[in-house]
Image (cartoon, each protein chain N blue to C red):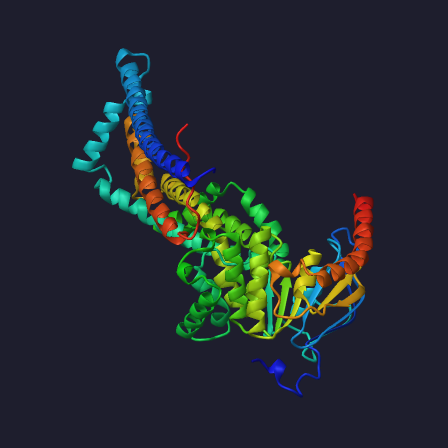
Length: 292
Length: 276
């Protein structure tokens, strides 16, 4: 502060040390992320190894609990030789189709109803009690009704997936609409927005993060709906594969089908995250705290 | 520039609030009176500041003029016409951040004309010019969260002014800003306003801000709000915010109004304590 000369010198020194600090931080960050990855692999290998070892030593009976090598062999067999119901790809495709259809229909209906009720206090007051009742029913049980009424085909599974998805998305869309900022709505109204413009350009975008959050969860629910539907009665699909494996006391088969389902859910999760990132690019990016 | 300056059309005031009472129904089923027998007239092209103790119903005054809420008794007229819906000639700047966070600066400013049916290309062209006018040309494509508080207020001003409001309502617009930014924004507002000569009602709790900007300062009583006193501010325009507060005339007026306001602030605090 006394004279400009030392100030410049200090600034230069600060720049230099800042550079070094940045390099240090980068190295620390890289080291941390490689430790994280190494630990992840270690845990994976350890758990599978323990399981495999326990079944070969005889602590655990592989007949009841399967074994990793058996599960891998089962998946390989299904993939190369096909399952008892036809090719594995067809089974995956059937389940995926039911899930995606149920997910799309259920979430579209949930979004529309949630926004409609969220925007209309009177309708919300009238229907809220029924929604609470419907929400408290264990909806998986409806699967039996759908099998009876819609048959063993795809329709009954889609219907169950729709019911599973609808309420989750509905509740979130409704809440999102209710949480829309009042000043923002008043602002749009005074700027000249009609009721319709208000809904499409303010209410829906501000409910979007709520809706997207529910979509993450509800794809999983759609998958549960489809698989349980297949389980209850069907001619195709991964759920039937599980049910068949169960009937044959094939524990490896159940685990193999489970892993296939998990992979499908993971892929869908990535896709939804990708869509979400495109839709909410206006949001502030989270600040990266240096690893502690 | 606007119709307000055409002679012969200045006969009806821009805003007439006549013996308005406004009650709210509380969740407990009791009526809470926010304003009682409230009367205020704002002439065309006039800049009126409304000051009063916190929670006295200053914002209610503005909401009555927009048509977002209705009076329980009495009448509100805008340009001689009774207010039944949101008037297109009214512009409103909010205290909180009312920008649309998912729209870029350009799209935020263009929102008004787009809502009002102006073709998109023209709306964006006009928005572009207004963004230049508030000095944000370089930030057009950014989103609100990427801007500072002062810059967001500039966007809000452009968003309001692009609709060329004849009546401009501001609800403590700069209260969230730091003191330096606030002074800059006050100058900015006066500059934009002098280009339109709209009638302004500016609600604030900052007495100095009110005296520095207004043609008239209206002091409200503690809740329920009525007009306590009205003070005419005869300081010459154009005014420079960073300098005006050191002028003897300014200090004298501010002291006189503060004497009025202080009583009401004390009453307001006593009743707030009694409630708590």
